[in-house]
Length: 162
Image (cartoon, rainbow, N blue to C red; front, side, top):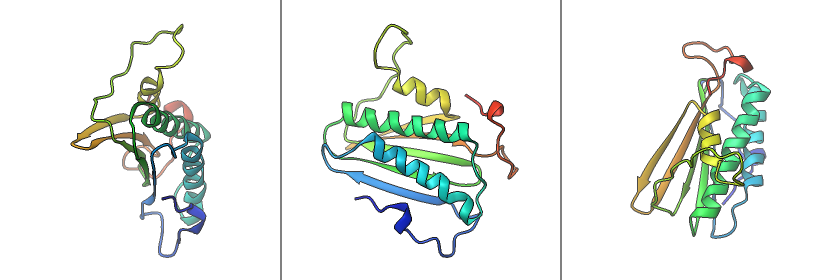
C-alpha cells in the first residue's frame, strides 16, 4: 500500500519532527522508479515544513541507494517487499525489507561485469549500511547524513562521507 506524500498531512510537523514515508508492495508489484519518486517527494517536502534542504548530491545518492535496494529485493527475494524512509535533521534512513533470509554480500568489484554492483554502490553513498536478518526475511537500512553531527548546517557536497 502506498500513500502519496501529497496526501499525507503536514499539520503539527516542524524541523524537529522526523519525516516518515512507507510503502509495501505485493509479489511482483515493486518498482524502483516508484521508490525514487518517493525519495524525491520526501526531500522536496522537507524544506516546506522547516527541515533543511539537502544538497543535490545527497538527493542523487539517496535515489541511487533506494533504487539499488529495491531492485535487489525485486531480483533476489520472492514475495512481498517494502520500504520506509525517515528523515531527521541529522540523517536520511532508507530501509528496504524483503522475504529472503539470505545475508547479502557485495561482490568483488569487476568493471567488466554487468550487474552485481548494487550493494557496493549503496555502501559507497551511505555513511553505514545495516542488515538485520529476521525469520521471515531481512531489513537493509542505509544511513545517509543530512547534516554534520551537532549542527543544523547542511553538508557541503565535497564533505559527504563515502
